[in-house]
Length: 224
Image 1: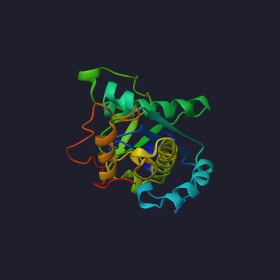
Image 2: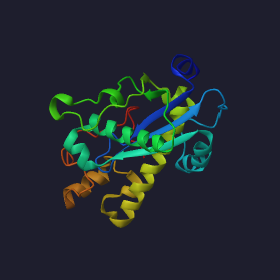
Image 3: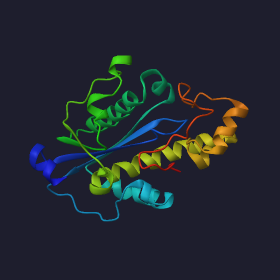
Image 4: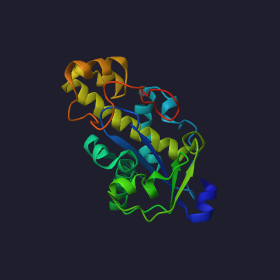
C-alpha cells in the first residue's frame, strides 16, 4: 500500500468484491480509502473469508472510522443478466467510488484484489458494450491482496457484511431458498428449492441455476 502511495499519491483505496459465485442476489463491491501519511496499522483486519460472521460485523465500525471514506456498491441480478458478471462488478465498483466522491474524497489509486482489472476494463465489452465508464483513477491489481493489504481486507469486510445482511433480510421474507443461511450460494438445499419452486426475481436467470457444477468463490470454497 505504501509503495502505491509513493507512486500515485497518499489516498489509496482498497477494493474487493463478494457474491460473484452466488446464484441469487447482487454482486457487491466494497471500497475503503486510507491516507498513507496518517493511517495506523490494524492487525485485526484480515480477509473477510477468514473471519467469523460475528467478527466481521464487530469490525464494521472500526473499518468505517479507520478509513477516510468508505462505501459499498451493488449490481443486481438483473444487471448481471443484462451486462455479464465482469461488467456488473465494474458497475458496483463505480457506484461505490461515486458515493465516496460525493463525500469529497477521490483516491489517487485503487488497490484491487485479484489478477484481473475488472474495475478499469470491464470484461465483456464485445458482447454487451460498456454499462458504465471506467473510473479515471489508476487501478493496480494484486493476487491475494485481501491477505496482504489491510485496506483491501477492510473493503472485503464491508462488502461481505452488507451483502450478507441483504440476503438474510430477503431470506426472512422468502424462506424457501435458505438465503438466511446460504446467502444465495449454490448449496444442495438451494438447488433443490429451485427445482421445486423455480427462480425468483433475485435469481440470476442467465445462469445454470438448476444443475451443473456448483459455482465457487475464488478461493475454491462456497462462501457462507
